[in-house]
Length: 222
Image 1 (cartoon, rainbow, N blue to C red):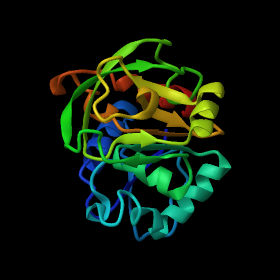
Image 2 (tube, helix red, strand yellow):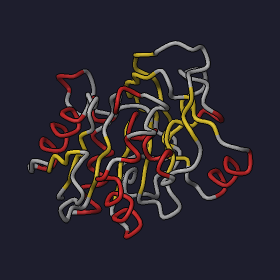
Image 3 (cartoon, rainbow, N blue to C red):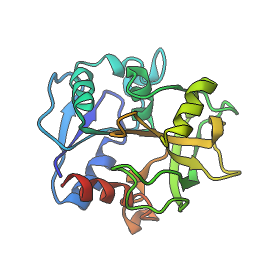
């Protein structure tokens, strides 16, 4: 599986994503700078976590206008898998590739800890290696992870099976509507989630619950 990781000024999880991809696929991902205008022919594009452009204006708002994002949107529309983690999720909502928005955490505090998630949807290239209802532990590290959308959009996400992950009852770290932790696009080839699967792909880092997400992609896209 060929992959690319987009690097924005302020990204701080791009190397985490690259390391996880190399360890699991055996191939180094292409590291694409935000000012590049085209991406190589790849199976997966990752928008990593961090604080792109210092989170000025709104989280992800400036990154969404980067030259590289035009090609990311084009490839996503053509069916290429796109994974946005944390800040990457924020960028995906700012570009319109995913609905809704990420706003300040309900308690207005930055949260950095592991949270329990429940796998809601397994019929996607990102989640096929999980079992529906499976509980996993991913770390979060964000101040603006509170997912919001109008009721019509939330109902549509539910009805179309596009809620991929939810925070387990009692473990919602940011106040996200309906405990939503990650959602899929209409074509189901774009996933945005606030927790960090790339940080739990090696037992030396304290867990491997995130590895199945990448293995799902490898099994489907290789």
